Image 1 (tube, rainbow, N blue to C red):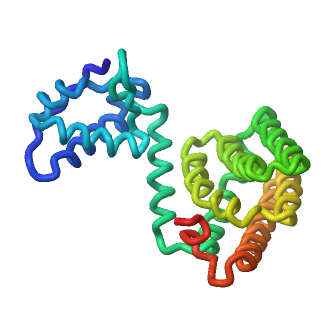
Image 2: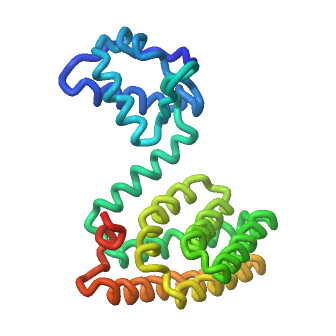
Length: 254
C-alpha cells in the first residue's frame, strides 16, 4: 500500500476536492500504477470527511480510469494501469461533446499525422516499420475473412502504431483520442467495401514510402487516404441517414 498522506479538507462538494487531490497525486507520479490507496477509514481520517464523500470520489475516479476497485481479500482502490489512458479518455470525451464535424477532425488528423510521418522517417528503425507492415497484412486478412469490426480496429491500430514509431509518447496519446471518436463513426457506417479496399491499399503505400525514407510521398499518400476516407464515410452516412450525419456526435450515436 502507498504511504502517501493527504491533508484535511473543508467546504461544499468536498468529494470533488478529494478527486482533485488524488488525481494530482497520480498524475504527478506520487501514486504509481498498481499502488493501493489508503483504506477508506484512513482516508476519512486524513481528509476529515464522511465515508460518503470518499465513496463518491472513488466512483468518479474509477469512471475516469484513474483507479480500479477490487473486492474481497486484498481488495481496495488501486491506481489504474496508465494515467495517460485517463487523459486520452478525457480528451476524447471533450471531442465527442464538442460541436465538431468530421471535416474538423480531418483537418487535425492531416496536420498531426504529417508531423508524425516526418518524425517516423527521422527516428523509426526497422522493427517499428515491420510492425506497421504486419498491421497492414492483418487488416488484409481480416478483410478477406469479412471480419469488419476487427478490421476497422486494425485500421485504427495502424495509426496508433505509426504514432508510436516516432518515439514520442505524446503522439500516440493524441492519436488515440482521435481514434476513439472516429472508430464508432466507421463502425456505424458499416465500413463499406470501397473504404475497406481503399484503406488497406493506402496503408501499404504509406509503409512502402516510409521504408524508403521518403517522407514527402508518404505524406502525399496519407493526405489522399484521409481525404478520400472522409468522402466515403460521408457518402455512406448520407445513404443510411437522410438528415445531416456529418456531425460526429450523431454519427457515433452520442
